[in-house]
Image 1: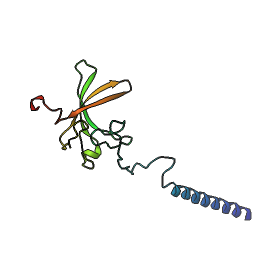
Image 2: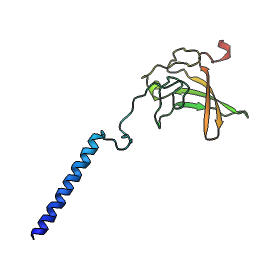
Image 3: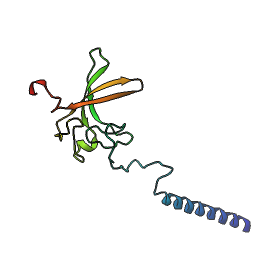
Image 4: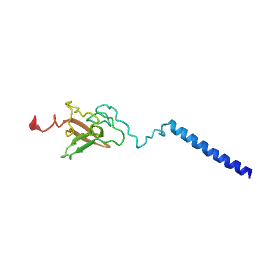
Length: 142
């Protein structure tokens, strides 16, 4: 009977030590385990390099995995490129960042867009911004 209680005591102590060690390790990593970020945490947008991949062309915000730029691509008329209208990312559409045309440098209003050419490449698309609705707008306003 004594050895039974002794084995039970060792098991309880082992479980307590494992629980304590797990919680200690978890608090040292700040709740993150091996580079994984909690889905509830939203990383703030940093400044990206204009023209770099995963960067918003309107506000130059660095985009995280899963964040997209709102855009509309129109069908091609037999050519290699397609016309595209770019509205912006979640940061500049919500008003957190200043919207600016990378070609003419004017500040964009919320309803203004960027006009671009999209080239479909194997595996991904390549985009060239050619102006905004102000500098590349209708030809009659020029």
